[in-house]
Amino acid sequence: MIFVADSAKDKIRELMEKAELGDEHFVRVSVTSGGCSGLTYQLDFDDSSHADDQVFEDNGVKVVTDLKSFLYLCDTTLEFSGGLNGKGFYFNNPNAARTCGCGESFSVA
Image (cartoon, rainbow, N blue to C red):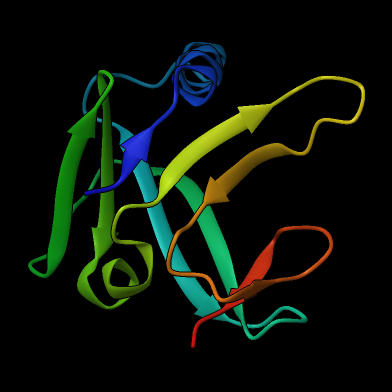
C-alpha cells in the first residue's frame, strides 16, 4: 500500500483543480535510478494505466505505480510540507536505508 497524508491530499487536489484535470487523472509515483543516494522518486499526474500497474486509493487519492517501483515504495506515505522550511512533496519511506540531505533520493539495504 502507498498512503497519502492529509497535507499531500490537499495539495494534490489543489494542483489538479488548477490544471483542470478530471476524475480520470491520478497520481503516478515511480522510482528511477539517479540522485546522490542511487534512487530517485518521480511524481506526476497521469490518466493511462499499464498492465503491471499497482493501484491504490488512500484518503480519497488514487495512486498508481509500476510493479518494480512498488517494491521500493511498499508502505510509503506521500506527504507535503509547505512552510518556510517546507520541502514540497516528500516520501516517508520505511524501506529507505539512507536518504540524501535534500530528501529527493534514497538507497535501500
